Image 1 (cartoon, chains in turn purple, yellow):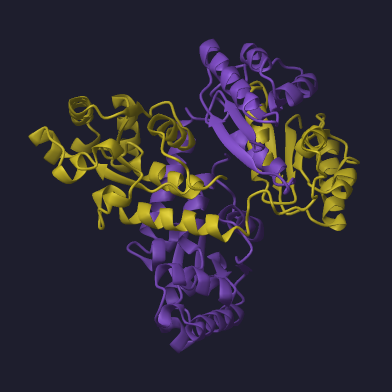
Image 2 (cartoon, each protein chain N blue to C red):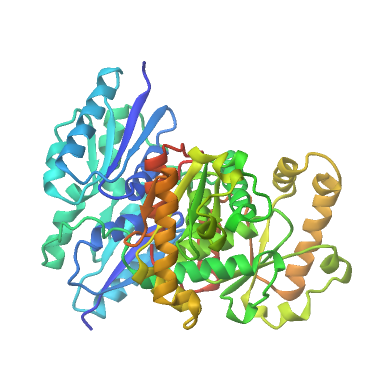
Length: 274
Length: 274
C-alpha cells in the first residue's frame, strides 16, 4: 500500500490542525492522502494511543505518516514526538518566538483556542444565525433595518449558505432576497430593498455553473434550461448595474471565500472572531 | 499607545492565518491585541501596501506588530518580510520539510487552500445545508431516513447552529427535533424517532447557562424561569437515559467543538473536508 496517512492531532476539535494541514497539502497535487482526525487528545493515555495509531499506519505502508498537531501542553507533545512520522506542530514552532516577543509565558491551557466558554461570542453567533434563518429567501421577518448586509441573487446562486456562514463564522447579520420574475418584469427592486440600498450586495454566477447546480435539484424543465438560466442572469446584471450594487461572481469561489469577499468589499465589521 | 497590532495576511480569505493566530494568541492572556485581516493579497502592489500598513502600525505604537501570514508564492513572502514585525508564516516554516518528505515541488498556486473550485464539495455542503434547514426543529420534511444524525434537546440547547455547522463544515446531514411538553408528559419519544434510534444524539446544557441564553430571548415569564428550565432538563435526562441515547453537555463548548464531539462520538463520516 503506497497511500500516505495524514494525521490531524489536537487537544481540541482539530479544526486548526486540519485548516493548517489542508493549506499546505494542497500545494502537493501529485499525492494521495488518507486523512485521519484525532481530536480531544487531552490525557497521557490518549496521547499514547495516538502514537500507536501513527506507528501502525506507518508500518502498513511504505510511506511515513505526516502528523499535523496542535497540542498546547508540552507533556503531550513529547509523547506524540515518539511516533514515527513527519511532525509539524504549530506550538512547537511558533510558541517560542511569540513568548520571546510578548515577554509572557504561554498558559498551556488547552481549550482556549476557539473561545468556547465565551458566552458573549456564542450568543452573538446564535443571534446572527437566527437572524439569517428568519430573513432567508426574502422570508418571514424582512427585518432589514437590523441587517449588516442583504444579499441579492437568483435561485441557487449561493445566498443561503453564504448568509449562514457569515452568521456562524463572523456573527454578521446577513439577510437575503431572491431575484425572480417579479423584479425581472418590472426591471426594478422593491422599495423596501431600495430603502436599504447601501446594504445590498449581489451574487452572480456563470450560466453553465448555475445550470449544473440547478440540474442537481431538478434535472429537467424550465428551471435548469440554458435559456432560463441565461435570461435570469442577464436580468440580474441589468438590475445590479441600474442601481450600482456591488457584487461578486461566485463561480470559482467556496462559501468561505464568498463570505470573506463580501466583508472585504462592504467593509462590514465582524462581530466575532473565530 | 501600547496596544499591539496583529495582522493576518493571506492570498486567500485569511481564515487559515486567523485560525492559526488565534490558537497561538489565546496562550497569552496578559495582552491586548488589535486585529487586522488583510485577505486576497495576490499582487506585488497589494503586498507593498501591506508592508506600509504594518510599518505604520509599528510606528504608531511602542510594540512591534505580529504578522501571521499564509502566502503561497515566494515573491509575495519576500516583499512581506521587509515589514518591521514578528513574522510567522506557515509556508515559510512547513513547506520545506513537506517538500523533502514528499519529494515533490510545491505548486505555489494560491487559491487551492480551500478547494474553491471543487464543485462536488460545494454541492455536498449546499445539499447538507438545505437538508438541515428542511429538517430543523422537527420541521417540514422530517426526512429522517436520509439523516446522518438527529439531534435532540430543549429549546436553545444549540441544536440549530450545530446542525448548520455540521452541514456547512462537513457536509453531514443533520436533523434536529425539539424536546417539549409532549415528550415530557408521555415520558416517551415519538415512534418516527425511535425508528431511527441509532442516529439520535442528545444535547444537554446546565440549567444556569440555559436560563442565561433564554433570558436573552425572553427576559421574563415561564420560558426562562429557573423552575421551568430545571424541569425540562431533568426530563430530558430521563428520556436520554431511558433510551440509552448518547449525549454531550454543551455548556462549556463552542459550536465547532459540539460538532466535532458529535462526529467523534457517533463515528459519522464527514462528506467533505474543509
